[in-house]
Amino acid sequence: MKTTTIPSATTQVMIVEDELIVAENVARNLKKFGYDVSAIVDSGEEAIQTARNLRPDMILMDIMLQGDMDGIEAAGQIHNQFKIPVVYMTAYGDEVTLERTKKTEPYGYLLKPFKPQDMRATIETALTRYRVEQSALERLTSQMQLLSAQTQPYRSAGLNSPVSKSGILKSVDIHAANAPGLAAIETKLRQAIAHQQFHLNYQPQLNLQTGEITGAEALLRWYHPEEGMIPPNVFISLAESTGLIYELDEWVLKTVCQRTLLLHRLGFESMTIAANLSGHQFSCPDMNQRLIQIAQEAQLDLRFVKLELTESVLVNDIDIAIQNCTELSNLGVHISIDDFGTGYSSLGYLQNLPFNTLKIDQAFVRDVDKNLKHQAIVQAIINMAHQLGLEVIAEGVETAAELKFLRQHQCDVAQGYLISRPIPWIEFQMFLTEYRDGGFFNHPKQGA
Image (cartoon, rainbow, N blue to C red):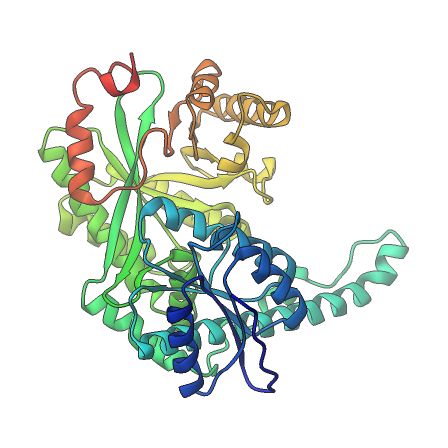
């Protein structure tokens, strides 16, 4: 397919699609909505070159393309090199494909066949999000430059700066409440909550000593009836910017408590399901009281409530974090620190925060059986955590060799695709039943 270009001062959209009829139909609809089609290309290699030359405002990217490079690989390179927002057009909605696309940080999905109005809404939402992010980044850069200028005399003199770095960072308004299109986004999110479009998938957690499935992490998913699955890295930020994150967090907590109790009644008495808690909910003044009420309504003992918090949430205000975590711990709530070791790690707060579990980020687990640096980091985290009386969960375990290394070095629990992908509720119950007798390591599927 020959590349075609159209110069214009309006929003430029590049189409990457190897079916000419589909590409021309998309182009016609884009023009009807007032967009300019800067180029139509049919291969990943050509998409990268054209993006480099034309720098369009938006790219509509098909996943299956001509040539040696598919749309996901092309989108990843475009994201890394040019930071141009990409919306995927695809007929492939399977979990593996979506997991690959998530790594490229897309701005939306269009599940074929899609309606013209859905394409327009997805593009507008993506452009709004991109503009908000760029505006916030520019303000952050400007304030960081100001911070650097203000602290330069103190750094030169070897003194501590009186300027509060965290105060400046907090002043950056990333919500951009008056951004165009935000009202429509908020309406769509509210409708999704009201119409029960959100679901939880569950990724099993394997006890590496006993071979039992002793828990799971609940992962939020949004299945839009027209747009397909909208990934968390899109809707979570939108929920936070509109304030709807509180409703989502509360729904997740209620569902997790109810289903944990159901599993107990089905005979899985020690099962826990971890819920991820946003920074907004964690800092909410009445969070602990709401949690008590939710657990009481579900008739679940708080000892079986498990919350996951990221390091960034905890270090945002360490004094408040210590206070909140202490209150939660006194209630019997199990607290996990997620993505440990990804940039905020501090031995100081480990001594002061009353939590129960460290989750080693998958970046360190990947290839741990052959990467010497990863081995040193993982062993150090396991040894340190055990000395502090903490449980260790390794995330992102994908190979038998990684699992073997973790078992040999006394990691407590593993989670990852080798054990199971995140699965819907009914499938999760079937998974637990299948591995109930004899455990994971003795199951015929594991070749033992």
